[in-house]
Length: 180
Image (tube, rainbow, N blue to C red; front, side, top):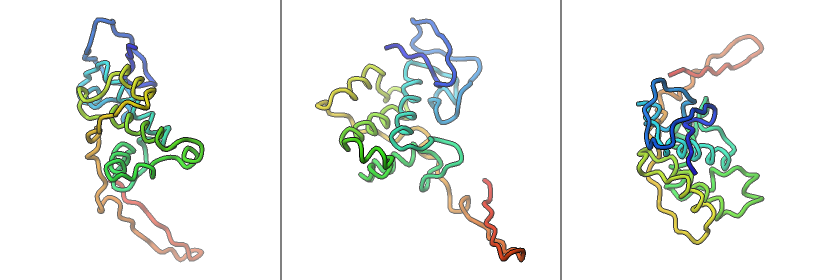
């Protein structure tokens, strides 16, 4: 397998003999792009492994990775998934419909592989060939993931504060969220 996509919404062809490429313009969806590509335009065979990991976490959780969601203290799914994994509460991230239909060990394996795919350092991510082996071999012992990229993006108490204003019209309470 020779993956060459840094964002599944955008595809660009690179020659097969390039292990790493630096692009002129960075294009893609934040949250799905590998951090080295998003910050430096550095693309490698590990860039789409990152995107695959994000998509896997979205499928398992039934939630979007980024956007206007807050997951506990984190503003993205990666940080939230990592915290639950680290605390051995990974089942809390799984979409309820999957818990009923699937085996929990298979789901745990998918989360473990996904977290390996979204490692901050590209060298720590598996290749897609390794991902296929990890997902298809139940007997293979998986390595423990390190914290993922974008893990340190947290929401402070000040950013989540709510201002409540009371309106006289219809005795309605209006809650307004303060932007960052």
